[in-house]
Length: 255
Image (cartoon, rainbow, N blue to C red; front, side):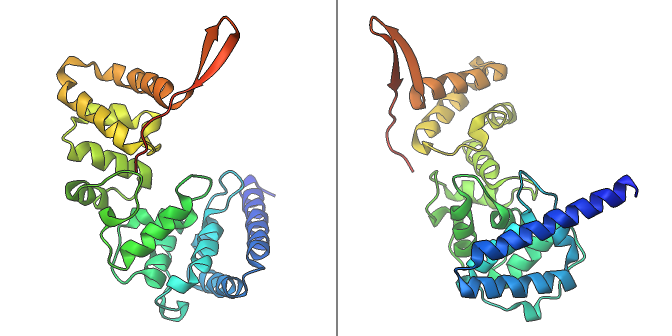
């Protein structure tokens, strides 16, 4: 057996395992389980490449998307019957299927990644945002971790297909604040590219960086952000007469 054949066989085994686990996860929800079965049958016949998605950290993105679309069955506007399917890549297949099932209005393709988002603090929120926006709500009106202006929303919704939602949101925020390309790239190279917590506080930092961009070496922005994050939002070890004391720096609550 060639290495390619072994890879195909191994991936099929992993896919079958993911499908079995999906049925187990949905067993208590009769409607979701039935919807998953119908979606799986449809995909196997009309968009088999969706099941070719690579396994990432024990998660099968294609199967995960079907599970979550099944869980959001109450948001479906159409059945699988009218979906023509697609021979496109697994990501485009997820996008096409989710647009067909859920969308009253077209949404940017990069938002379809919401359906296979796992293990992040916004995973379930992303799917709720997708549904709400697909129903006609402006994205900036949603319960987002950062306050989004109209200009930020426009930049965000025109993001490239490959961008993660958090990355696209941070990029849109910085560009709308008129950050230079150097500042944008420097910030997006840090943890704040995807960590959207404490949005109100970080907005003041971005304003400062942009106003003083000429005086700040872009190469120092990353270390500055790490330092601010450490002293403002993380536990800091302080040596005292009584030994090491852990200090928690609290920040103002923000969206």
